[in-house]
Amino acid sequence: MDYNGKLVLAPMVRVGTHPMRLLAAGYGADIVYGEELVDKRVIASVRRVNAALGTVDFLDKGGEQGGRVMFRTSPSEAPRLVFQLGTSDPAAALAAAQVVCGDVACVDVNMGCPKQFSLQGGMGAALLRKPELAEDILKTLRRNLNLPVSCKIRVLDDPRDTVELARRLASCGICALAVHGRTSQQRPRDPADWGHIRTVVGALPDLPVIANGDVMSYEDAVRVRQETGAAAAMIARAAMWNASVFRPQGFLPLDVVQRQYVRLAVSWDNALPNTKNCLKEMADAPASFPGRAGGPRVLQGHEGNVAVTRVKDNTGLLGLLGLGGQPPYQEPQDASTAAVGAGCGPLHRDTAKQPASKRPQQRRQQQQREEQQQDRRQPGLQQTTGQPPQQQPQHEAHGGRQQQEQQQQQGGQQEVAATEVEAGGELGQLAEQVQPLPQPGGLDAAVGLVAVVKSASCGGPGAAANTRVAG
View 1 (spheres, rainbow, N blue to C red):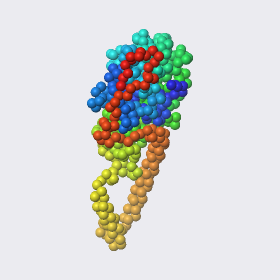
View 2: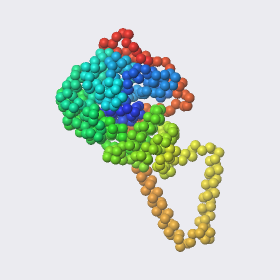
View 3: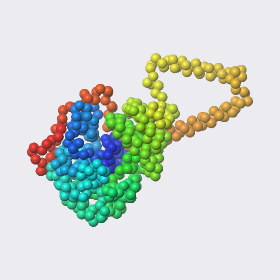
View 4: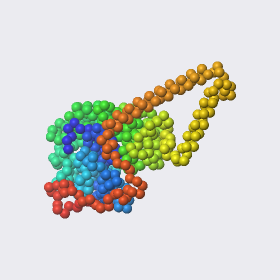
């Protein structure tokens, strides 16, 4: 895997799922990390080919009886997909890696997560204080996998200690080292230390280093590579809030990104709670974030968060964003009836869904209304309308203002539509990958129930002949 000059989507729990990775890749991410998954959960999962969606699904234990999707991927993202593993045991790490190694480009060991659940299990940032165990995990993976192995760390308090740890990890044969410029005690409000990253880069001239921390725009990604000498830049929060951060041209309006994300999420049958979580993260982007600006339908702030919370299904989610209910989930041709609000119902009328028997009656009613309006315009009927002749010019002037306002509104909608077209062009490749949703009741039949045996490419030169092959 080539890291030189690359943009990387960071691993983020409950964010780095399949549709978000596809969205980021469509906007320019060269490498995408999945969310961290713990080794024991991965080992217990079941691999299934989902023929209806064209994906490979890893189902939680009990998957044959309807277990939820733990991890989903599609062949198109395989060359850039990094699977991040949470582990504190070499044998468990290897067993978990062997489950997924045939469907990803690289396996990464998380050594930087400061969350309590990781620390309690000896995973994540806990490994920073146990370099011998960290080395054992990496060497075990390298000996037994024909797949690149990398790891992600946080800096230590003393740059000299960080450099010593980085050198030990590099000696294990890893393909890259991602360095977050904060210690495990620091939080996002604390500034990332790019100088600390630069020190690590200088100590590892032969190993690609990925710089992470406070990369909030495309310009920041360019600048962090220049100031640290890192091979690549990793983006986390900014990508979570507005995935178009990877575009050299700058951010797209947030509502455009939100609609593109929902199209992908619904098309690839993403779990609704996860889709809603990602939309809430976008809505909660801070006011200081440059990618927060949105168009007329943006879900933003508390009101946007509440609106997403109230959604009960994908139909309500599509309606909330003014999208049609059928693939490819585009906006209606006449957007003048759209409205922005906190409700969960469709934001436009869809007369095509009304019973055919009612349409002739509606046409007759419309014809009667037009005839009545025409009668009122005939001479001698002005007094019956309650409209004095001398007020007619004012009425016409008011009508002129309404017409002008409508023209201005249509012009704004055309501008938004042009932005949508631009985004659609950039995501054209992704659009080709989107498959129609399976018909209700057809998903179980479409999902293969026969375990797919792993390719021999998962085994490295030191793999034992009886190494367990996960289904």
